[in-house]
Picture 1 (cartoon, rainbow, N blue to C red):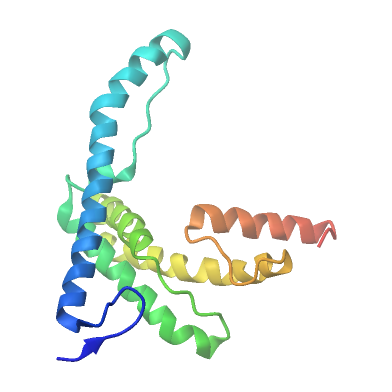
Picture 2: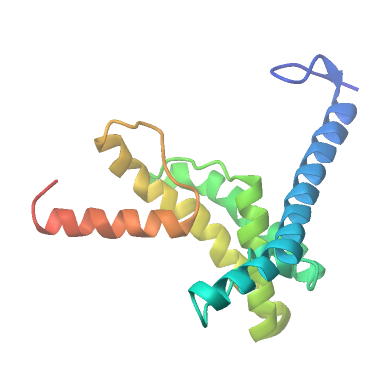
Length: 182
């Protein structure tokens, strides 16, 4: 076996290093899911009581990770498809003139899983694959498009990961260009 060298590797065997990193990832996901479940079980009832007094008719919003236990297969399919699309983008982007965007694992898992759950609910397996593919593409293309915008602001190499941040950035850039502010 080869040895892994570098930050955090501690000159470990490659198999041991991979197993440790996998365990850290799994623990992080478990903690995030446990936090969402705790939030749902404890805070939502408290919110409902508070809302009855101060904001009648308000509906609590919960994180999408609440759905992951309801559709674990769709979640896994979404993560894997989204991540594979992002890996393909890493290979293709240099050839089409876009900067390489290294995918964030948590963004791939959370948004890819959510996209697949909703895609599966509306279009079955095919819907799950299409939705998570689009998600993976958006997680790479939109940050690559916003990278020059933030470079103009003096933040070189900085971008947002999720479409809910990059789309408003692109829209705002377009509006400011219309009025010649940039």
